[in-house]
Length: 347
View 1: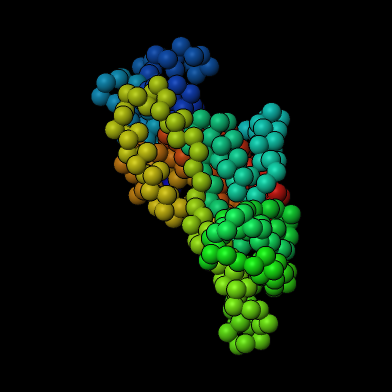
View 2 (view 1 turned 30 degrees about the vertical axis):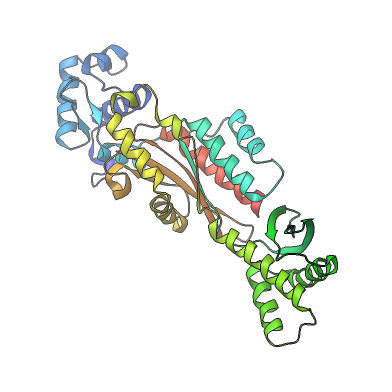
């Protein structure tokens, strides 16, 4: 955060600073004194404006690129603007409808998470990111359906009605009765439990000899558990959509920065660790440029908000990653609304 309170700026300096930041966010270009004087409303000459710009630059809030006489905000200046001057705008009715419609698709919860990252990416023109909830669903039933001599289809039904399928390899010829017996046995232990909880109970019962399963059915139970456990371990902790949005016309003038940013996004574990910092926040968090070492070189910004279940527990994080000049006033409420919508959906 900036060490300079906004109250220490004169009203004239605050207004000029605001116009420079908003002009830069809108155009991506430095803002000059002539532009500010021509905009009207300030009642100052270009010379007087240049004097204020120089003072703001001395404070570390603005910088003058060597190729331009105009000024643009520094990361410290952007932080001061976001914390002390930004006028957030609520998402429009169309934006709210697009977010809710995108996440209303039927299927596993991962579909809604992918949709959330994609719609945020589309609306913000940034990369949308969602951290997958760190929890396992409670399960209701598992059925093993024969597909051939060496394969079966495992159909898992969650208590929320979600259905997922996986292929289970079979050890040669398996009696049809063994598939039915294994399915009934697993389903009996799944009710109200996560897969991990059910697996522990089943394995303890089999090891103790209390299970009445024959050898073929015991093997099928182990194979079914192995497939689902391996699948859960491989599920991504982070979903990223819309990286192509980062390759806009302005970005093409700074290809090295974009390359660094895309490299950062490829390292999903590091991005997940950054988003994890937002899990402890009460509301949306904003990371600007070098405030976080991950995006220090690429000069990027992250807006992230935790989303919660109906009991108020944080179960994941949703956000966007883009250039530091993104429209914070518009995107912050959009991310916050998406987080609230995800919480209602997952509840």
